[in-house]
Image (tube, rainbow, N blue to C red; front, side):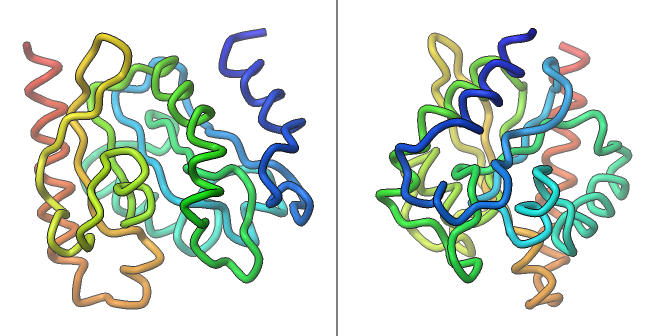
Length: 190
């Protein structure tokens, strides 16, 4: 059993966060253990809770299209959430819930060790990067995520669920995706 599989099993049995009581399934991260890019949202929605897989609903379908637009297949990326359980009514996880679950996502980042980390939406950005300004202000900017002794380039961008509600923001997300693709290309050629 790999370390990511062992961590997924630990997540599935965790009862520290009260969100575990209402879940159908835990939703640990998914993707290759050596992914060069990692996408992190805030919490699973209804479809994710039913299937135990991150980003499989409408937001996930849009994320898949966004990835394809920059020539990246979903199977090449690691996708996870700050909180591995669905909050009631699909609300954002509270700061308290996010902090309880933070060690799980930090460990996933450490194990995958991506070259680029993409924070999808404000809750993910605030939890991982400590940036509390709105996502509109910080999207498209590069930050540094400290993972052990390594610095990882991190960029906040809009969550696909936001883009479904605000399609006019897709052009900004497109610019972010192009910058992310460029960073991956530069890293690969370095």
